Amino acid sequence: MKTNIHQGFTLVELLVVIAILAILTTLGITNFQSAKVKARDLSRKSDLQTIAKSLEAYINDHRTYPLSDESGKIKCRSDGSICDWGEIFTDGTTTYVTVLPQDKNSASAYRYLSSSGANYSLYATLENPQDPAITTFSPEVYCGSNLCNYKITSSNIQ
Image 1 (cartoon, one colour):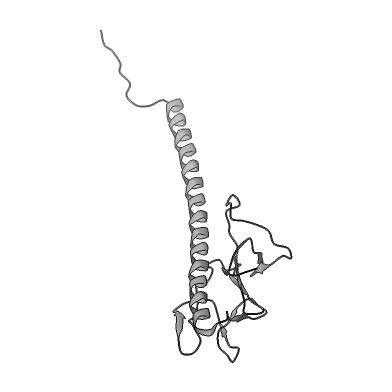
Image 2 (tube, rainbow, N blue to C red):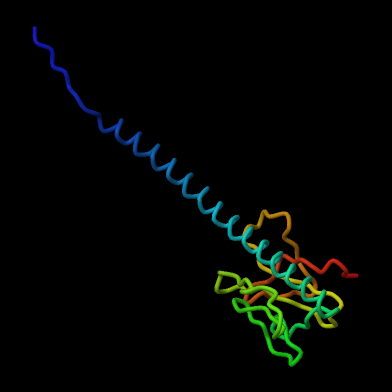
């Protein structure tokens, strides 16, 4: 008696394996995208901390924080010139940070506000809507073309 042994997979078995792989790939891509968003937000928070530390060094030298211009940038020199994001933060003699961090998202920008020099606020736009640090501001503050939703302030703010 001769037995026929068929080797290989049936069409149904192949479709089941393909479906499982598709589901696993979708889950992996979703988790990867979420991790990228959280990493960008963490970078923004770290950037604002770096800026805050440089502002604290500035106040130690000048007894006042630098003022801000109308676009939310730092007036870092006594003549009112601007230290833009991505450039050196210096008062002309002392360098407080070699490169002021800037938001990598082209639609967003960091925003610095200090009208009196007694205190300051730094703003950014976070992408992860589940981040517990996200808040809304009244009046609204814009970071580039996006609404700012994250803020740190000087330690002596009222």
